[in-house]
Image (cartoon, rainbow, N blue to C red; front, side):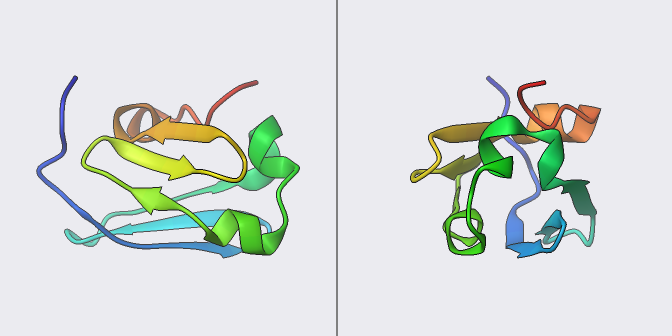
Length: 78
């Protein structure tokens, strides 16, 4: 599995989108409704996210998204 050279600066839920800011200045965002597990989450659950060199993890929602997938436009389960 690949790791990013870039790192996560900030992840936030700004209704209706999830916004991911990278240290390089790249900003990824997508509508939470595009991911069935995230769509069921409360704002507090969506803001409770863990970042790793590989991607993002929402422990309360049992969801993981890889940076590789996000950069391809894959926002999770469809």
